[in-house]
Amino acid sequence: MTAPVVLINVFSVPPHQEAAFINLWTEALERSKNEPGFIDAKLHKSLDPNARFEFINIAHWESEAAWQTAFDKLPGAALTQQVPYEQNLALYQVVVQS
Amino acid sequence: MTAPVVLINVFSVPPHQEAAFINLWTEALERSKNEPGFIDAKLHKSLDPNARFEFINIAHWESEAAWQTAFDKLPGAALTQQVPYEQNLALYQVVVQS
Image (cartoon, rainbow over all chains, first blue to last red; front, top):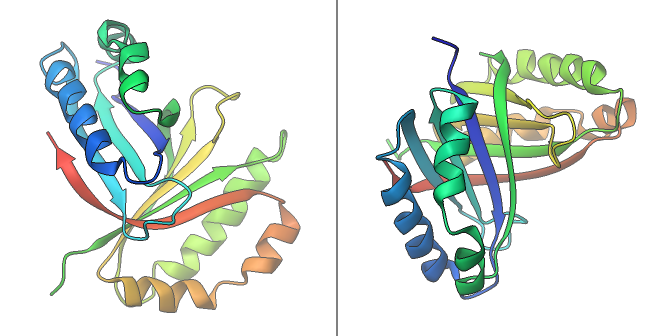
């Protein structure tokens, strides 16, 4: 089995829409977590409300292909219409750790 | 003991300076990991070299104060003079997980 991939999505959410964003993200999680290859996901919220990126999702998938298949099923456009968030999404691997 | 805080630092690094950045970050890690309250740190590199943020550090500290004390000891300005990276640093807590 190839090493799991780390999906990190860095979000900027308009002011006063944090609660709506959390609900939206949680709905998307409910769909994704039953998809083949899903391992885990954690939505992080900044302690400082003025942080450049208020939310960051860190998730693990068994492979890039498994994540892509699940991601393609999500109604991306519909989500951003409900809450106009900015996302910066990419797959990562750990290169240094301690 | 208060719950650990999650430090996430989202970096954008100029092209062809990835190796220099990894060395720089690793030197800073060598200093920080011996500071009181340090738990762990993982530097993630994007699989796609064209990702908006090529590097993301995800670290855990016993408290905000412990992290701040250690961070204040780092020669921040000297680091960015060696490699002119952009950083977006904040402390986070997990709000949703699965």
